Image: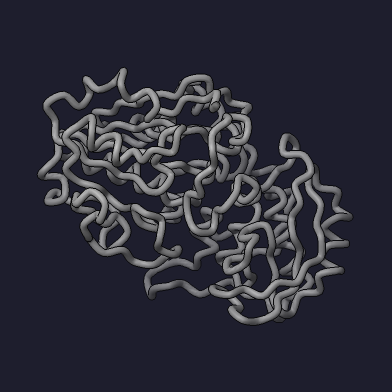
Length: 381
């Protein structure tokens, strides 16, 4: 029996928010209650649910990262599904014409790089412009709500993997993030948060008693979420971040790395709460598809002291130093865009300098401390 009650578990106490209103829902496969009943099915029975909205990976979680999604009709319910990961990443006036209140129910992973945060924020902006209402059914931050790590995104470096100046690890639930974004970034939507019960900020997801439903194809376990802020930085490089393996984001590598040397050097740094093991893997898709890659697997030995952003900086710096001739930052996707590493790290410092990981981290933690003080006023738990 789950000890944490999700927002959707508490919906009966908040049905007044939907009385006489047409309801839209942004959700995906994680949108279930603690008994794994779909939020779509629950709202279809309890409210006038008229439209569904699909984030990256789709309502049913069947679409790979980065792939465009088309408007469709949900096979199970017959309700129209509008994509929020196609030509536009925010609901248009036309999409919202048939609803009065838009509901958001998606499990996040506690990283500013995860696009669901900005799907929520963009939708809130559209709702505010049309004077409609927005409801967040709250869920746990799976990596806890205490720790804050990383820099604030610099002006000119915002994107769909970093829409606002928040740290990598921001320590808020989605409901709390919505409250923060709404006020701090002047969205000013009519916002309601349906809170959880019994969630505590120090909890990792396994401590909630809830069943983990993977939020996206490459986020299979809570362990993945724990290391995500350490290894997602490699998405902006020619190093595989483990997509196409059974351990996405837990392994990193390339065909030309020396796994033993890399593991030895990384373990020699004595970074808190993590060990590095030399590994070989063969991605079935994404970078280096079909090629034998060598690298390391991150084994988190103590989550409470593990600092994923610090690990990210050290691991990137070491791989770059050991393989300067073959290591590359990926080129921009478009002629007017910036390299992915810049959007990922919220600036150009990492790409353009031979940075010192500890010095950069210390500088970034000044930003983190600033945000930590700000975010506390939005805590619901």
